[in-house]
Image (cartoon, rainbow, N blue to C red; front, side, top):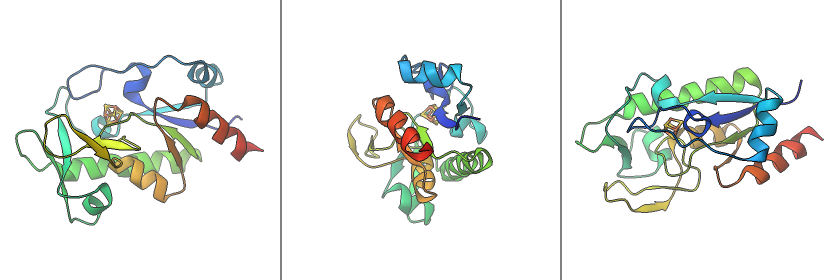
Length: 164
Ligand code: SF4
């Protein structure tokens, strides 16, 4: 069977974002993967039981790795500590890739869960900084190559490289 790829649920048109919207993506690579039944979808946050809609959340006081070490938190815009649910979501993503033998993921940029190169800075002011979300960090630690929705071709090339 062709290898599976993990894709953020919101990139597949699922209305799972904090505000109830999606970020459905259009790309030939995605079409090919869908046709080949290679796509495994997950929204880690809703899989962890967070409701939709929900308040926006950001990593506060450190990096995603610091959150995983209990040295920083994920908070929503009202200041509630939602770390436990976000860590659970990341762990569910890790379990899913392990179950399917997945080595490549395309995840939604800027999310405190899915971001792979830029996330919001924890001030809830719309400013992004270099960093990654919790699920991205756990997946990368496990050796999964994580890309964003601006990198479909690179993700496809990586999948091909692993297959050969
Ligand atoms: Fe869910 Fe990730 Fe999309 Fe956020 S970015 S809605 S956690 S799939």
